Amino acid sequence: MSKSYSIAILGATGAVGTELLELLENRDFPLSHLKLLASERSVGRTLRFKGENLSIESVSDRAFENVDLVLASAGGSTSKTWATKAVEKGAVVIDNSSAFRMHPEVPLVVPEVNPLDAANHKGIIANPNCTTILMTLAVWPLHQVNPVQRIVAATYQSASGAGAKAMAEVKSQASAILQGQPPVAEVLPYTLAFNLFPHNSPLNDVGYCEEEMKMVNETRKIFGTQQIRITATCVRVPVLRAHSEAINIEFQTPFNPDVAREILSSAPGVKLVEDWRTNHFPMPIEATGKDEVLVGRIRQDISHPCGLELWLCGDQIRKGAALNAVQIAELLIEKNWLKPVTVRVSSEKK
Ligand code: A2P
Image (tube, rainbow, N blue to C red; front, side, top):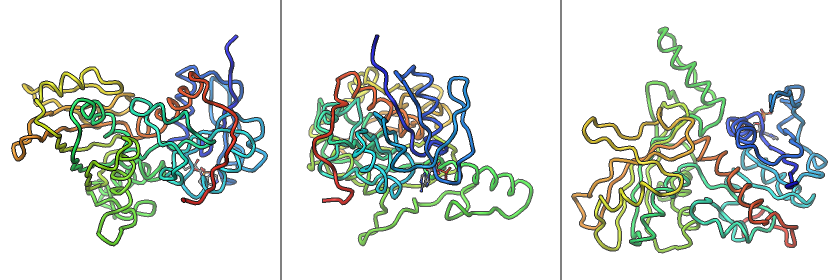
């Protein structure tokens, strides 16, 4: 009989947590036990899994006893508090927050791009930022045949990136506006319904927000090179759960768009969506609930001989977060990399 594993979801009641639950059920993950962890606020609630109601427990040291794998999606500060404690109890943590992503001893993994990095984990593996995951899936296969020199990205990010409460808030803002009432913004910084605003993560001293710098730094770490020049503008848009990105890529030498199309049509995790006759290209509504990143509108950049333009949409909660984490877990199991931890990772960035 093949082995099965005891899993804990930290942040089980959140947007990503509930998606993790669904994926573990639908992908027939080899589970022996499933523990649902959240804050004190959620104790007493239950969530359905394989026809049963599972109780939510509040996170504590003891909660990680006899757990093989923790899938964490409860925000950076919760991960900083609990990830190393879970590792000390013998679990491997796949962390969806940004707490450990740039730590030199923590692999940052997109299974279709850099699966081998996962082998070197010391107890924690970081799941990259959602916009970064989606972009790497489309750019990596092209980078393999013609090295990328520079990327200019603009993102159109859905409410789901700000959590389940933000998704609910956009709906109530829309309904208030339609009824002639003033919209309320409590979770989101501003009204998002019928509006958009630049991503509201903290700004650095040259005017880039954290989300933009995640795309820059994480992409380089995942690709294993500091040589690619990357710039991004991240914007929150009133879409519920799939992100879109306009990406301009400059390669070492000219890249025929038909060749890029051919490569992307068989790239793992990517689905080409292009009907030039009807102007049908990826749309967030069609990416919602899908595992693949939809890529299309591949065309020559008329301003640069080595440039290509492309457009993509991907489900931020699914491939941008939960699915990527589950795929990392499956990779660890398949390759037998769920090994005992020998070196601990500190919660401080070195
Ligand atoms: P809770 O529902 O009990 O607040 P989202 O990203 O959709 O907002 O979800 C965040 C998830 O992280 C939720 O499951 C939330 O649980 C959980 N969470 C937030 N803060 C903590 C905390 N301090 N300890 C444990 N879980 C937390």
